[in-house]
Amino acid sequence: MPEKIPQKIKSLRKKTEKIEKEAWLLIEDAKTLEELDKVRVGFLGRNGTLTQLLKTIPQLALKYRPEAGRLANALKRKLEENLREKIDALHKEKEEKGLEIDITMPGCAQELGSTHPISQTMAEISRIFKNLGFKVVDGPEVETEYHNFTALNIPEGHPSRETFHTFYLDDGTLLRSQTSPVQIRVMQKEKPPLRIIAPGKVYRPDATDASHSFMFHQVEGLAVDKKINLADLKGALTVFVREMFGKKTKMRFRPHFFPFTEPSAEVDISCIICGGSGCRVCSFKGWLEILGAGIVDPNVFKAVKYDPESWSGYAFGMGVERIAMLKYGITDIRMFFENDVRFLRQF
Image (cartoon, rainbow, N blue to C red; front, side):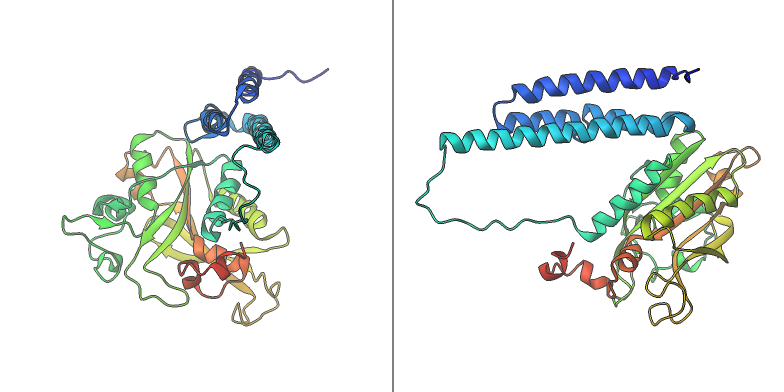
């Protein structure tokens, strides 16, 4: 007996079919590239119809998300293909009519840009965790001490609060030193369960060298639900590591301390250069540190008025530059920000 299709999936299919028909008619009716771009923005832009539909997927029950994601992404690929075909057709039509073409003029070389490696890496990290049901969120880069420290169980007098670790502004606010404050802001507004990642820029007054920068990028994640434990954290990070660095990459947890998680761990992967046998890149240890993680400290839940007896969660944070340097074999963080086209063209 065939499996009964859930009503929510049926409803999503009807929505995607309706969007596909509407988009197809508008694409076919477009007479110029400007009109076609308006169609693209209307469906695939930040506030487009399909984009809004994709944002509803994390709200579905976990068992429905894979099928929902498949339907939405299949429609996205279809619309992108239809748009490309229409663009090609409009260009061909324009050339055949000989509009705005002066064959006596010399040709002009057009340099094509590419997505910056940091943006590529953040997009890849986001893609992996979105497939695991996480929602991508953002927050302000100018923060309060409460959101950046106090609510994260970082006490007064902690070294990270000192001016040699944090950029303070004249009005008492600061440039966020981590993207964890986004987690606090989301928990203050939303009730659990929730799964979020917060990518973005962070700032610390570090001396610039091959492995440090006063501005860099982080992706921090948070999952809150009933009875979440370290096994859930390890499962999510295992998927991330294998998707980002390859299925043969091994992972290990080392005990550590972070004020906002307890227990806490540093997470290492087997060296992607030597496969764990030991080399100069991994200091002949066979392992490379990539991120920190742990179970959310009950004091953090109390700060956002979550009952720590009812809810549990895990959190993790990684430096995007660190991930990109390991993935692409880059040895100096400064290369990301020097805007040397010889370096950037490789990506």
